[in-house]
Length: 187
Image 1 (cartoon, rainbow, N blue to C red):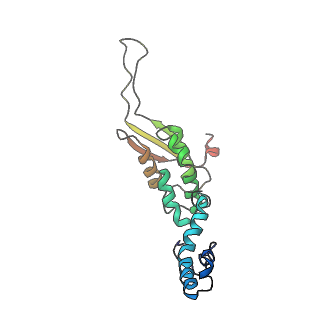
Image 2: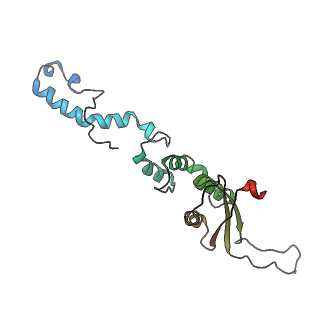
Image 3: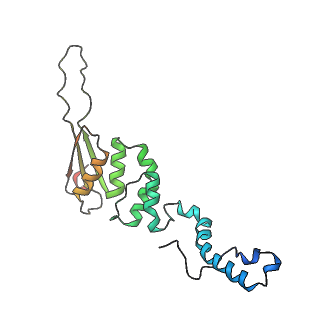
Protein backbone atom coordinates (compact mmCIF):
# COMPACT_ATOMS: atom_id res chain seq x y z
CA UNK A 1 0.00 0.00 0.00
CA UNK A 2 1.24 3.46 -0.74
CA UNK A 3 0.14 6.90 0.18
CA UNK A 4 1.91 8.46 -2.83
CA UNK A 5 0.21 9.46 -6.09
CA UNK A 6 -2.88 7.33 -6.61
CA UNK A 7 -3.89 7.18 -10.27
CA UNK A 8 -7.40 8.45 -10.85
CA UNK A 9 -7.98 9.64 -7.27
CA UNK A 10 -10.16 12.75 -7.57
CA UNK A 11 -9.57 15.72 -5.33
CA UNK A 12 -12.43 16.52 -2.99
CA UNK A 13 -11.38 20.17 -3.15
CA UNK A 14 -10.37 21.01 -6.76
CA UNK A 15 -8.23 24.13 -6.77
CA UNK A 16 -9.44 25.25 -10.22
CA UNK A 17 -12.93 25.80 -8.86
CA UNK A 18 -11.58 27.99 -6.06
CA UNK A 19 -9.78 30.40 -8.38
CA UNK A 20 -11.23 33.85 -9.11
CA UNK A 21 -13.69 34.02 -12.03
CA UNK A 22 -10.98 35.59 -14.19
CA UNK A 23 -9.17 32.21 -14.29
CA UNK A 24 -12.27 30.01 -14.68
CA UNK A 25 -11.92 29.99 -18.49
CA UNK A 26 -8.10 30.09 -18.56
CA UNK A 27 -6.97 26.71 -19.94
CA UNK A 28 -3.40 27.02 -18.60
CA UNK A 29 -4.56 27.88 -15.06
CA UNK A 30 -7.08 25.02 -15.03
CA UNK A 31 -4.52 22.46 -16.31
CA UNK A 32 -1.90 23.73 -13.83
CA UNK A 33 -4.26 23.45 -10.86
CA UNK A 34 -5.46 20.03 -12.08
CA UNK A 35 -1.82 18.88 -11.82
CA UNK A 36 -1.67 20.20 -8.28
CA UNK A 37 -4.95 18.40 -7.51
CA UNK A 38 -3.37 15.12 -8.62
CA UNK A 39 -0.43 15.65 -6.27
CA UNK A 40 -2.50 16.88 -3.32
CA UNK A 41 -5.40 14.38 -3.55
CA UNK A 42 -3.53 11.55 -1.67
CA UNK A 43 -2.39 14.02 1.00
CA UNK A 44 -5.89 15.35 1.53
CA UNK A 45 -7.31 11.81 1.52
CA UNK A 46 -4.80 10.76 4.19
CA UNK A 47 -5.62 13.78 6.34
CA UNK A 48 -9.36 13.20 5.93
CA UNK A 49 -8.88 9.61 7.13
CA UNK A 50 -6.34 10.31 9.87
CA UNK A 51 -8.46 8.85 12.70
CA UNK A 52 -8.49 5.52 10.83
CA UNK A 53 -4.68 5.54 10.70
CA UNK A 54 -4.53 5.86 14.48
CA UNK A 55 -6.93 2.96 15.16
CA UNK A 56 -5.11 -0.41 15.24
CA UNK A 57 -8.20 -2.18 13.87
CA UNK A 58 -8.45 0.11 10.82
CA UNK A 59 -4.92 1.23 10.00
CA UNK A 60 -3.35 -0.10 6.78
CA UNK A 61 -1.12 -3.15 7.28
CA UNK A 62 2.05 -1.32 6.25
CA UNK A 63 1.29 1.49 8.73
CA UNK A 64 0.90 -0.88 11.70
CA UNK A 65 4.64 -1.08 12.59
CA UNK A 66 4.81 2.71 12.81
CA UNK A 67 1.71 2.78 15.01
CA UNK A 68 3.25 0.04 17.16
CA UNK A 69 6.35 2.18 17.64
CA UNK A 70 4.17 5.02 18.97
CA UNK A 71 2.81 2.87 21.80
CA UNK A 72 6.00 0.87 22.39
CA UNK A 73 4.49 -2.43 21.28
CA UNK A 74 6.97 -5.09 20.22
CA UNK A 75 5.38 -7.04 17.40
CA UNK A 76 6.92 -9.84 15.43
CA UNK A 77 6.49 -9.38 11.66
CA UNK A 78 5.97 -13.15 11.40
CA UNK A 79 2.78 -12.95 13.49
CA UNK A 80 -0.55 -12.86 11.66
CA UNK A 81 -1.80 -9.32 11.09
CA UNK A 82 -4.80 -9.84 13.41
CA UNK A 83 -2.47 -10.76 16.28
CA UNK A 84 -0.23 -7.74 15.59
CA UNK A 85 -3.31 -5.49 15.64
CA UNK A 86 -4.44 -7.00 18.96
CA UNK A 87 -1.00 -6.48 20.54
CA UNK A 88 -0.93 -2.83 19.42
CA UNK A 89 -4.48 -2.29 20.69
CA UNK A 90 -3.60 -3.72 24.12
CA UNK A 91 -0.11 -2.19 24.35
CA UNK A 92 -0.97 0.43 26.95
CA UNK A 93 -2.70 -2.14 29.15
CA UNK A 94 0.26 -4.53 28.82
CA UNK A 95 2.76 -1.76 29.63
CA UNK A 96 0.80 -0.88 32.75
CA UNK A 97 1.38 -4.42 34.03
CA UNK A 98 4.87 -4.90 32.61
CA UNK A 99 7.25 -6.53 35.07
CA UNK A 100 4.49 -8.30 36.99
CA UNK A 101 3.40 -11.92 36.87
CA UNK A 102 -0.02 -10.96 35.58
CA UNK A 103 1.49 -8.74 32.89
CA UNK A 104 3.77 -11.50 31.61
CA UNK A 105 0.98 -14.07 31.80
CA UNK A 106 -1.37 -11.81 29.80
CA UNK A 107 1.34 -11.04 27.25
CA UNK A 108 2.12 -14.73 26.68
CA UNK A 109 -1.58 -15.62 26.43
CA UNK A 110 -2.17 -12.85 23.88
CA UNK A 111 0.90 -13.57 21.74
CA UNK A 112 1.07 -17.36 21.84
CA UNK A 113 -2.23 -18.65 23.18
CA UNK A 114 -0.59 -20.34 26.16
CA UNK A 115 -1.35 -20.66 29.85
CA UNK A 116 1.74 -19.58 31.82
CA UNK A 117 2.77 -20.41 35.37
CA UNK A 118 5.56 -18.14 36.59
CA UNK A 119 7.93 -19.05 39.39
CA UNK A 120 9.98 -16.03 40.40
CA UNK A 121 13.18 -16.87 42.26
CA UNK A 122 14.49 -13.32 42.50
CA UNK A 123 12.59 -12.10 45.54
CA UNK A 124 13.88 -10.97 48.89
CA UNK A 125 14.36 -13.33 51.82
CA UNK A 126 13.27 -12.70 55.38
CA UNK A 127 12.63 -14.51 58.63
CA UNK A 128 9.57 -14.22 60.85
CA UNK A 129 11.65 -14.65 64.02
CA UNK A 130 14.33 -12.20 65.16
CA UNK A 131 17.78 -13.77 65.10
CA UNK A 132 16.36 -16.88 63.44
CA UNK A 133 17.68 -18.80 60.49
CA UNK A 134 17.23 -17.07 57.19
CA UNK A 135 15.52 -18.97 54.41
CA UNK A 136 17.72 -20.15 51.57
CA UNK A 137 18.88 -17.47 49.14
CA UNK A 138 16.72 -16.88 46.09
CA UNK A 139 17.57 -18.95 43.05
CA UNK A 140 17.97 -15.94 40.79
CA UNK A 141 15.98 -17.63 38.06
CA UNK A 142 12.66 -16.79 36.49
CA UNK A 143 11.03 -20.08 35.51
CA UNK A 144 8.06 -19.88 33.16
CA UNK A 145 6.09 -23.06 32.51
CA UNK A 146 3.75 -22.77 29.55
CA UNK A 147 1.05 -25.05 28.24
CA UNK A 148 -0.84 -24.56 24.98
CA UNK A 149 -4.50 -23.70 25.44
CA UNK A 150 -5.70 -24.83 22.02
CA UNK A 151 -3.43 -27.84 21.60
CA UNK A 152 -1.30 -25.93 19.10
CA UNK A 153 2.48 -26.42 19.13
CA UNK A 154 4.42 -23.81 21.08
CA UNK A 155 7.71 -22.37 19.81
CA UNK A 156 9.92 -22.35 22.91
CA UNK A 157 12.51 -19.99 21.38
CA UNK A 158 9.91 -17.32 20.61
CA UNK A 159 8.34 -17.66 24.08
CA UNK A 160 11.82 -17.37 25.63
CA UNK A 161 12.49 -14.18 23.63
CA UNK A 162 9.33 -12.55 25.02
CA UNK A 163 10.15 -13.72 28.56
CA UNK A 164 13.72 -12.41 28.32
CA UNK A 165 12.43 -9.02 27.17
CA UNK A 166 10.30 -8.86 30.35
CA UNK A 167 12.82 -10.41 32.74
CA UNK A 168 14.79 -8.18 35.12
CA UNK A 169 18.51 -7.97 34.28
CA UNK A 170 19.64 -9.68 37.51
CA UNK A 171 17.65 -12.87 36.82
CA UNK A 172 18.21 -15.68 34.37
CA UNK A 173 15.21 -16.94 32.43
CA UNK A 174 14.12 -20.45 31.64
CA UNK A 175 11.04 -21.65 29.76
CA UNK A 176 9.55 -25.12 30.04
CA UNK A 177 6.92 -26.30 27.59
CA UNK A 178 4.50 -28.64 29.35
CA UNK A 179 2.61 -31.30 27.39
CA UNK A 180 -1.16 -31.41 27.06
CA UNK A 181 -3.72 -28.73 27.84
CA UNK A 182 -4.73 -27.42 31.28
CA UNK A 183 -8.01 -29.39 31.06
CA UNK A 184 -6.15 -32.69 30.56
CA UNK A 185 -3.83 -32.18 33.52
CA UNK A 186 -6.38 -30.89 36.01
CA UNK A 187 -4.76 -27.44 36.35
